[in-house]
Amino acid sequence: MKACVLYAPRNLVVKDRPIPEPAQGEVLCRITLAGTCGTDYSLYSGKFDVPLPVIPGHEGIGVVEKLGPGVTDVSIGQRVVIQPNFPCRECVLCSSGLDNVCSDKVRLGLDTDGVFAEYTRVPANYVWSIPDGLEDKVAVFTEPVAVAVHGLRVMPAAEGDRVLILGAGVIGLLTLQLAVLAGAQVTASDLLDERLAIAANTGASHTARADEEGGLEPSSFDLIYETSGAPGALADAIELATPGGRIALLGLPADEHPVSTTQIVRKELRIAGSMIYTDEFPYVLDLLSAGKIDTAPLTTGITGLDGVGEALEMFHSPDRVKVLVSI
Ligand SMILES: [Zn+2]
Ligand SMILES: [Zn+2]
Image 1 (cartoon, rainbow, N blue to C red):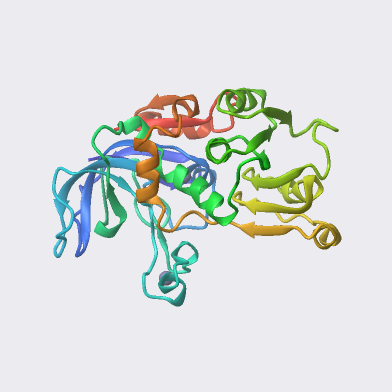
Image 2 (image 1 turned 45 degrees about the vertical axis):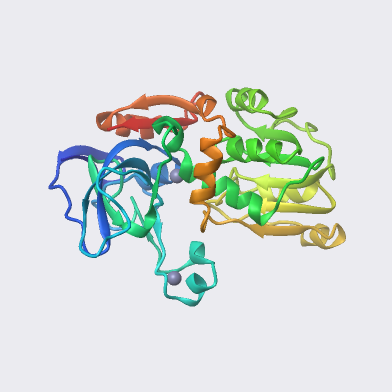
């Protein structure tokens, strides 16, 4: 099979690799469409300490091609989306519904070969059937939509809430649509005008440049979703949240940044982290099937396996949101 293999940071080569054999409890998927994301870029640029070589990619859909021993509830030929984090399912966290923070979790495309390949093998428990009528180009967004849905579970938005989305990348733009669906009045903030234009076209009632002074009124938001991962974003959110306000952190900052703990107390803010997802995939597939999320404005390109390196190299281009990989 053809596969993108990362040998060293920024050294990604399309190679012929043997088609993997599904082990006990696994299925072999023929990948049809994949998405590139910030995690892939971080791996590509050397920010993850994982053994190389590895086939990157974790957002993928495909068709079940072969069943490993003991698999009974998945059938060959089934169209599926892969849930790309495989928790241990045995530890205290996993048994209490916190499998998203299981420390023994295996991450597809990081700890094990991922979806930028013609085939990948995954545990049968982590493929979900794609409903008939849900197009590939929409279904391929299931994983990032699950991240956003989890953020709204951690800190639910309600009718009339004044919501601020910090960071209008894929997760920010999806969180924006979910908050609008909940009836909130949403403002989006980002460094890039291109992304703010998409935010304005997908339901934001206001947009603001994150680098412009005085753009947003302090203490004026009931609920803030921080999706940028910018080191100073939490400090900004604490400033911008209203007394009694709530902040959900979905972005993973590369560096730590001091915050005003005094303001957290004085304003009685509630702050929560939101880490990937737990059991959201079936709900997300229903949401996408119902046409509730518009993924078209977020899809800014499509390439093949031999274009993945360039897509990752161009990750920070202002006009880029999500580049898909057709396999
Ligand atoms: Zn992703
Ligand atoms: Zn576990």
